[in-house]
Length: 308
Ligand code: ADP
Image 1 (cartoon, rainbow, N blue to C red):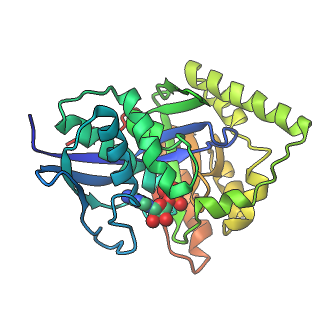
Image 2 (image 1 turned 180 degrees about the vertical axis):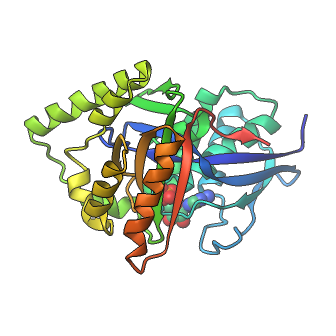
Image 3 (image 1 turned 30 degrees about the vertical axis):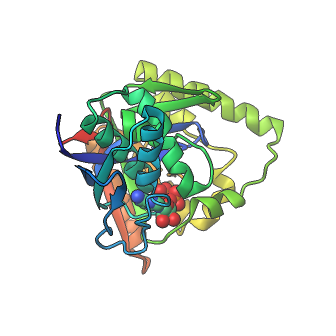
């Protein structure tokens, strides 16, 4: 059995327009790297993360530590691990920084323990880790980060994750303005009530999006990405949102919305060529601001955490 493993843990886009709290997909353009080593101290040791000195190293507060502990508790093991995280996804980005760490941690630990769990089972443990970041149980980032592709979280009790392979030419462009929005704060903006008319349009879109993904119907995917409920309430948090959306749609995107709880914004395209044009359009809008930002062009990835 291995004593040490290195993994790539992908970023992910959750909510995906109409699918608030139930949908997410993995991207391969940005992700964290993690190195896990077995130790003989029977404890989880997390090293300070270079460039992110504020990230907790206490294993009870870092999502990686909590996720691995959940796995060890289920297995009845007291194996210790040293964990090194190379963070490329800024926390509070809306592209699943904490989820990448939680998913990477459980996949790596599982590998070092002789793979007692399937990828699907690992989502449960990653989700327990993710809870310390957001204060809430949700799997719409950890499921795609662990499994890859699109994931539909149909229910939580018990967790019911439906994995969908992405259409082969589905590309994603993400712009990440370098400001932090905490998931907790972004959730507090949302009204708990939904007018029935809006709910009807929204579940029509969710069903349309699912159908579009299964049949690789890019036009249908585009029509269905609309979010009538969350985006209108949250877009105030995101600089230049309306202009950005208008420009990327003119540049040929299938659809565009907030990634996770923001501030990142994503657009989906049919093919890389359009994705590059869309990235250029995003760049033009943001160049006019004095904000720092990063743009990622990535295939919607059908791979979750990769063992390197
Ligand atoms: P994101 O969607 O980018 O994960 P969240 O607001 O959901 O953003 O989570 C970020 C919070 O999670 C921060 O408060 C951060 O301190 C905490 N956190 C704990 N462990 C980790 C980790 N390994 N990686 C990233 N964030 C972590």
